[in-house]
Image 1 (spheres, rainbow, N blue to C red):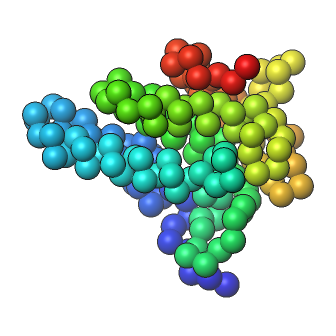
Image 2 (image 1 turned 30 degrees about the vertical axis):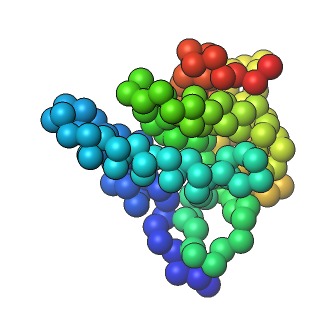
Length: 165
């Protein structure tokens, strides 16, 4: 089995996908250090690119991704997509690059079905978010974490006017 770099992006980045990237950018803004600001934004741009495949988000699965692993890989988690959307929304407040609203739009689209399984990751009748994306479909459980992930992502998308019609 290939060696994994981390169990998830949250583990790799110290608990929050958006945190490390935006901490660096935020520190740069607070300290007036443009180098730190741009490093944080560059790292986040790298993550958006890395997590995109086939024209849609293809997030690192819960078990991580090794250097030789093929894509797509599953069990993809809604919280990872929401963390990326949050990071992009926060970056959009500090930088006019269109990659940030586009990243939020891609995250919203992932929940709406533009993902590796082509399945919606929420139930529009209940508002509940599904707990994971697998190769054979979605985990039908609708936990609070996944529901908050879809709600926060769609709120960011609505605010940034990137929800796909």
